[in-house]
Image (cartoon, rainbow, N blue to C red):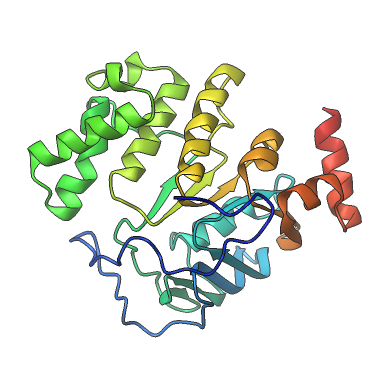
Length: 283
C-alpha cells in the first residue's frame, strides 16, 4: 500500500480492510451513535478531559487520526501523552469528551469505554509477556481465547508474525531467553495477531538499550510503510522525523502544536515547542 508523502495528511479513503464483528472479548457496536468523523478518519477524539484525584491531566484535547497516517506525540514528562493514548484506546474513562473509532462511539464522558474487540492494538513500555509461555504461545493466546481461532491456525499465524518482526528463530523461546528488544517485538507481534486497524505505541523503546531500540523502531517503520495507522508516544526524534507523517507536541495536558513532522521539528511555530526541541536535541 502506498503511503502519502511524509509531512502531508493522508488522503481521505475507505479503510482497506472491512470492519469485522468483535470477538467474545467484548462488543464493539459499529452501529452505535458516533461523533462526526471526516471520511477516512480512523480515530477522532474531541474535548478529551481526564483528571486523577482532582489533578487535571488532559484539558479539552482534540485529535484526529486519518487512515494510513503515522502520528508521533512528543512532549515533556507529565504532559499527558500516555494518558491521551490510554483514553484513545478506551482504557481510561473520560470526565469530558468523546472518542470515536471508525465512525462508531468508543468512549464518552460518564460511561465505561466500550472494548474495541482487538481492532485497536496497543504496545506499552513494559512487555508484559506471560513468562510461562513461549513467544509463539504469547502471540497466539488472544486469537484463540478471544476469537475462538483454532489452535493450529493461531499457531501458524503467530509464527508468521514473529518472522515478520525478525524472530523466526525464537518462536519457541521463553521470555527469559529473549533480550529486551526481542521481547518488545514479541509484544508487537502479539498486538498484530488480532488484526488491528490502528496501532498505539506508548514509548515502546523507553526501557531498551540503543541496539535494541533500533530493532524495535525498524519494525515500527515497516508497519508504517505497510500502511498501518499508527499513533506513537516517543522521545525518539529520528523516528519522529523519518517515520512519522505528523507530529503532535503536548505540554501541561494540552496540544500545543500539531502539523507535518518536518515543519514541527525544523521550524516549530510555538515557543514552547522550540524550547522542548532545543533541550532534547542538545542532550
